[in-house]
Length: 475
Image 1 (cartoon, rainbow, N blue to C red):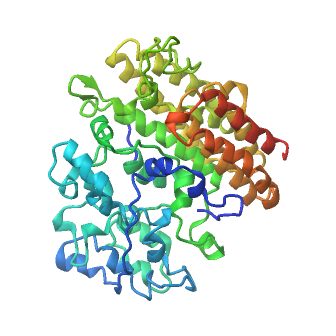
Image 2 (image 1 turned 120 degrees about the vertical axis):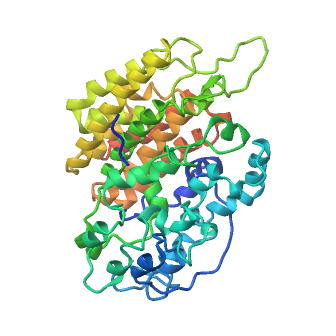
Image 3 (image 1 turned 60 degrees about the vertical axis):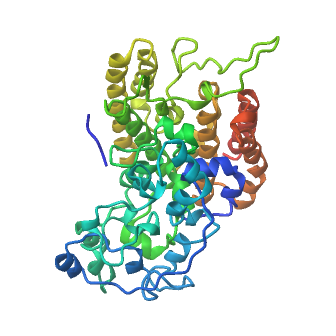
């Protein structure tokens, strides 16, 4: 199987971090520790450092000079230059990456390590792969600090090769990319980088097992456009667009869904990740189909509703298909020529679970190929017109909404409607005032997925339907 490794904000999305529950934010960003710290002081180093020291990762301090990205106020002529302050914000969601290492030594991190029989989470590769820029000691420059957490180079790539061209007068984005900077302006590339930690990869320390979640690690969830908004530290202005262009919010969301399905099915087929002792690796399956209240009263309590998109035996743990459900809606609206092929492959994948590991792996490979074809098609097409309206209508329509029978899929749906509404405001299709009037409906849908313990599929579908209907009336 083939592997593959921001847009302007608007008043339509005030306080997304506030609207999501602490549990949802924790799941989305793998833990938020409120750790304050001072700004780093540093000056650019020439890329000859790599030749002199043999290292490729220079560390956050190298980016944090006051003439580069370490200003206290974002008033730079080309870029804001306060990017480190945003990354290091002690209380905002935007500072989660800088706090990722500190999470490991916090109470929850210590409890997880103790349950798993580890002395200290801060020394475990299983944790550092996502809670820090985790590279061999030989690749670390003199200013590199593992304790920085998820630093600049975790996302932008090892800087020793491109640092000089990055800050030289007249330097170009293309030149930086050619020297090893990661092309995060490309939706598929950005999705791959984010998915490494926010879903998982085959690299060391970038796969959250069921045992880790049983010990207390948050459930993994991913949505590219929403995560991009949380972590945006730049202005998408005329200068930015001239250098890099701009990815439409609908495109980011759609490509992110396709890449998430491709990543999930790719990892599922990996025999090294397939099992955990006697059991299949349950991290791939829907947590809440099993983890619900068990009672012995006069009335039975079912653990899940029958889902029309999952032809599986009653009681079979379903594969976590939150992104599959969203990609089905994407394909129907934005790539209709590929929609039936993807839908058929997803149903066969679920059905193959009834027949055993080998048929399931074969079906996963087919679904993976369909998802990658969709990703390519979604990355190549242009966006505008009624795209966002079409997708919103399908998410809330009869064919799709009936599939919102579990917490994970429903959380994806409300995040999707929120991000698509924001895109409609950005495109000028809906005014800020009109979007604000829909906020109450969006909030009701968020409230319905505020906690797995209180989740009710029927209540959620009703709340989402109100939000989708309100958006549709503005078309």
